Length: 395
Ligand SMILES: *Cc1c(COP(=O)(O)O)cnc(C)c1O
Image 1 (spheres, rainbow, N blue to C red):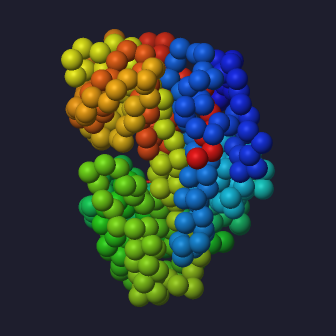
Image 2: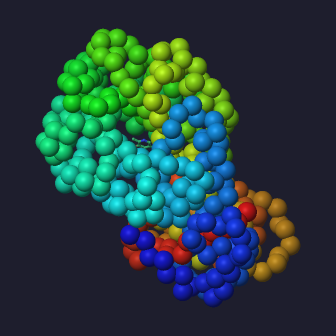
């Protein structure tokens, strides 16, 4: 799935750094990366130490098992870094994600938490040892039973749809059983489940700690209606990152709100799961994009909305930016800029505004930060512009 072609790096300065277990060529700083780079494309940077630190925050603080939601960034270096830091569980959604994680961490425990799976994907996952699956309809339950030969060792997780919360990116509306269906599905699935659980997703980049409490209270009330005992509660993802203009509460507040709600709703003795994606890797990745042209306050870069800047374009998120000048120049104060990506599509624009030194010019590099989640993972090859170079910076 990933090319590991580092040819554009003239000096792949692999540091003797024992913290670099990512498998990537490692550099001490972004400056070192740029000095070694001879390619013509943008460069994806991963910061394994930041990813490991985010993982430790969850492993030490989240009141349950931590499942990494692989879709946030499936780069093998991210999976390796999380695995070596102690993340043992992974939330996968496709056959390729199953194969990817197993190729890197064969003893990882996988949870196939996509509520709509192909029959082939179910067969493949079950044969590969996966026992945990989610579902949100009677048809999907039936499909899983048929494709596993009515296995008696399934751990089934009912995805419930939540009333609307306060996430920057709501995820309700696509998946999840409503209350009435959830009651029927819990009763229908119980006899077929070695373990039965409920799972939900409050929406990505959830900015209200109380959403998790509301979700867990809702689950309790659905279980009351169903009169069915469960073995597992999965709090999903949604844990936020401090992007500019967004000030989420500290992660510890989320953990203690969840711990309190688990106790208050009688879930404390069950298996508890959480599926952070964004919060584990967003701050551990950035993109180095070169300025190909400047027209006034418009900068034309070699990465854009069809590369790793999708959310900067579609959601107008203002990611933090940092300038690396191609040659030393005196500081000229700051100015607001708009970015254009390299493709010929006029949707390839990131309005920002992005606050940079006013003297930006062609040949300079801009580091766009916090793109480790849903940034690098979304990059396409549209119009022939893409990055094949991912490096580690050990900062
Ligand atoms: C995307 C996804 C996640 C991760 O969500 P984040 O908001 O990145 O934490 C977790 N669980 C499921 C089922 C998902 O689809």
